Length: 133
Figure 1 (cartoon, helix red, strand yellow):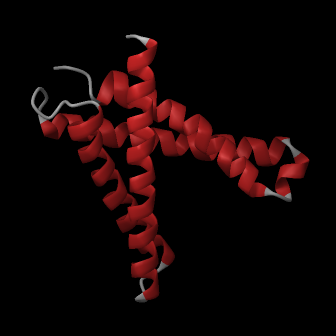
Figure 2 (cartoon, helix red, strand yellow; figure 1 turned 60 degrees about the horizontal axis):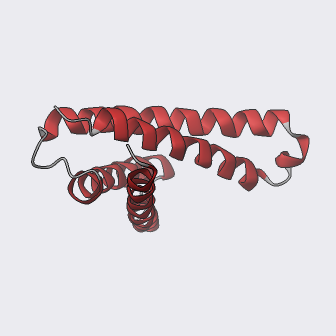
């Protein structure tokens, strides 16, 4: 894979992720404002965001809609996203526990976890979830 293709895929992946985040926050806030609890709202909003990003990545970034079956691909995507969430949280906790100053500005640890997880997720979806069948 060329560096140019990797940059193009990464830019598309990050753009789709930004749209996913917008949907995630919108669904969460709407449900929460209507009285659903934080956990229930988060589960629904995360599911909506993951489904949207899978669809957009499938159709527009990795372009596997014509070459792969959607069911197995979606299952692989969910596995990668779940593992990425675990990576994100593990890095976040490691930074909070390992760097004293970050306990006062935990958003920096959150961003550190997100950066590592983005890398993990991109590589996972590129080479496993959206692999040619």
